[in-house]
Amino acid sequence: MSIPNRIVCLSADAADWLWRIGAWECVAGITAFFTIPPGTEPKPRVGGFSTAQFDQIADLNPDLIIAFSDVQAPLLTELMRRGFTVLGTNQRTLAEIEMTLALVGRIVGREAEAERSLNEFRKRLAPVGKVTVRPRVYFEEWNDPLVSGIAWVSELIERAGGRDVFDDLRTKAAAIERVVLPEEVCRRNPEIIFGSWCGRAVRIAEIKARRGWNRLAAIRDNRVYEIPGADILQPGFRLVHGYELMKQCLQVEAENPR
Image 1 (cartoon, rainbow, N blue to C red):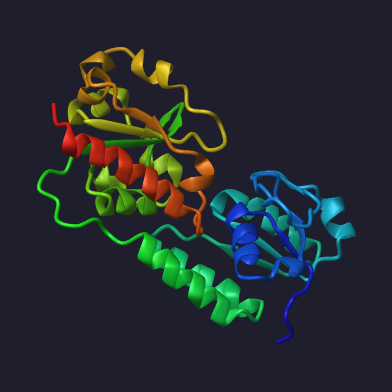
Image 2 (cartoon, rainbow, N blue to C red; image 1 turned 60 degrees about the vertical axis):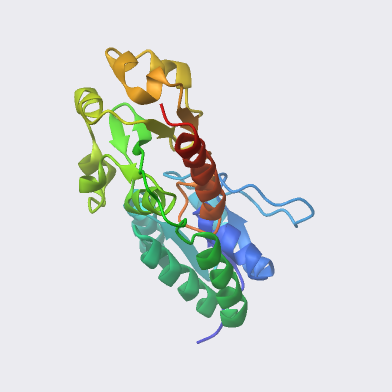
């Protein structure tokens, strides 16, 4: 199989990974949600997350288009209808993320580089040491309606030393299946709240002002934190940064119990 050399990345995690494993020259176009590292050759931006500029993509004459999640499935359907070769993945767990990153590495002939980066990925996502107390954590992926964290986020909360209060929803792949009621959040009374609103800034003051939430331990103790979406909601290498933030916040809780 020939190695594609004109790849359009409709997902930021794919663009980031190709850059990290030294295959940036294979990238022809990218999503608007990927921040190109300083000093890196710019690429045309041809779409958001649920939108794409089909004519611009066609002008790039891609030999492969990479996308992520069921949200992008309609885009891939249209691109296939137009005759393009596509790779659509729907990874939800850390293990599935590793497999997908390895697959992309093989596709572009960078297996060795991908494995080196994956070794670093695994090392930096290693679980913390012995944990005596696991604070209750609520992760909010969206605010209207409230959506709890996707599977890999729940896994990272546990690795960082917390306990996801909605771990029973971890296996639910679609966001609609992870919708939770504000009253249920109150019932589970998280001690820490992490927010990351899919491309929007988290309004912490709005979270604190929700009816009845002033009784939550996390609100009472002022432990509501934002994690940038690029560092926690994209299933790629940048999860290491979101994980570091989680560990820091949970460490503060462990050292200063209330």
